[in-house]
Image 1 (tube, rainbow, N blue to C red):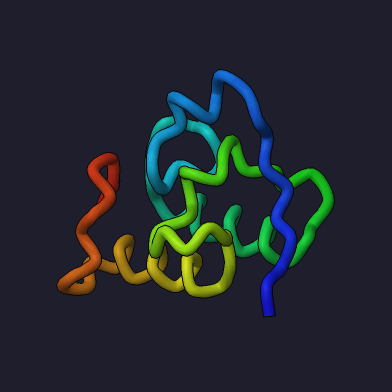
Image 2: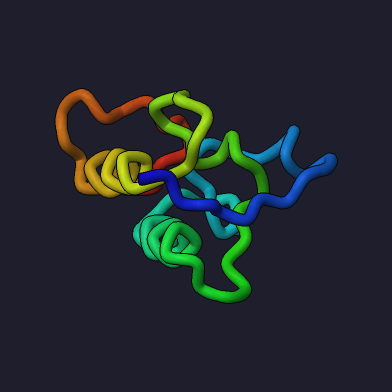
Length: 87
């Protein structure tokens, strides 16, 4: 089931870095937690743009994208499409 994730729209979305869900210019475990909370609908957790977390490019930000980010951060083979990843 799709979950509505709050996304900011505007100039920030154009410069947002893939995987940088909390907007601190680093992709790390904090982004995984931030994305999980945004997907769960926690108040105040807003993604800086849909393009930062739609890893499978299906037009939705959901649990599959959270799983992709978690695996990329953990260093799983085949999950290396995040250029700014800080391991």
